[in-house]
Length: 396
Image (cartoon, rainbow, N blue to C red; front, side):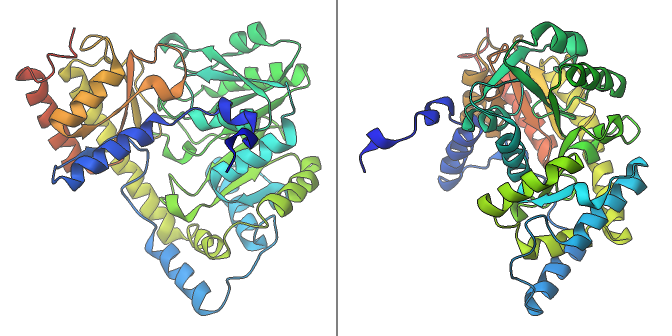
């Protein structure tokens, strides 16, 4: 193929360092090395038994054909009921669109709202794919440096200061990947009000909202019907490979999103939708809450353990399953440090390079979405790594 025909937008999409480290780790495992994975943000828990049984029934009954582009009506109603039971919010099922994962939801939202040259404000650091969704529609993600003082998040003052003539909205995540930090509800309300005053859109990625550990349940949907929210069955519901998510939009936007969904996706997987419906049974929800408590137990172990190793945790994560750790006391290059730890200690962490340009070589992201036994073994390996001088080529 003549590569001169490739679209120029590909130049705006950067490689994903997380996946590069995962490939390096896989190569070491093929050589017989024991590797502990604390890089990719994927729960070690898998789909609930109720979801698996529902998928099996759907296949046995032949419920495998296209659904509405908006999703199964029963699933949209179940998600609506979940908002009422968990957050006390009345969210009409007609505003809920079932998607092919949160990525599908973000793609639809950006397709509907982002046009060429439009600027979208995001915190730096952020999940890299979010800015790439904006770039895919020829918009410009404006990454605003957001440090520990801001909990690695945008504030209302920052939005007000950086809003320009081409700014069309904000794309936030709470809790966030890579930091595990949330935006305080009152501050998020002020951000939404400021964006509203300027006629912009507010998109909030809430795929980790079910994994908030230190606060009362909260959704940005409580801030007004104009807020657009993304969610997923991947994290709290432990269904990463099922590729199922949802999007909540203002009622007037539903026909436009439906038109896009019909053309871009036709529908989310029917089998996954029937499995997702079973996630809202009392038995499944009890299991997810039990797993949530286990994630919190892991967080409460790994944060002080990392500090004892010499990492600095400037903001304690309150959600998701990530720690964003300052490694500057150990190395002046997080990328080099993570590669060296993988080679010599068999522990995968990822550098801040993927997540923006704010001090990317100062921070590493650690995922604690693995067993407590693995976390304990990783700490033991890293204790040896730093104590025995294996890190001498990367430590200051």
